[in-house]
Length: 186
Image (cartoon, rainbow, N blue to C red; front, side, top):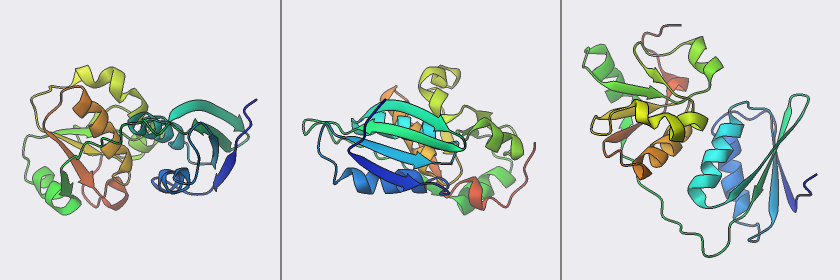
């Protein structure tokens, strides 16, 4: 059993809020201490794993109690590199125009399976955030890839992971599917 030094209540919050609140509270956590994040958003597991990895914190695991996910992160030390890769962004309006004009573009949807199945952009490649690191070889490193999620946070984390793997032409769609008004398929 993990005994946390700090507890964050993020129950009832949808992406990207559990990450936003975690990031804010983590500033007050001392290196080596453990933060417990209580969430109900199913996507929070992959989100927090990717965020911890990209920021040098240690993801310790998740315990489930009914509908509540209890995530545990250990804050990285002061020697943690704070290098953040800046991913170019495209507005949802400009992206929608490319899709509706029938431009041949590669779209990577990194939402969870249930979100994707509820509706996605036609021909979007689906790789959930938690699988991006292992499955990015399914994509061409020299193609322009538009990365989309629900709000733009998970897609940014996915693009940062892929950038470290040698992908050079990644564009984050902001905001994501939460405001998409275009055609979708199921």
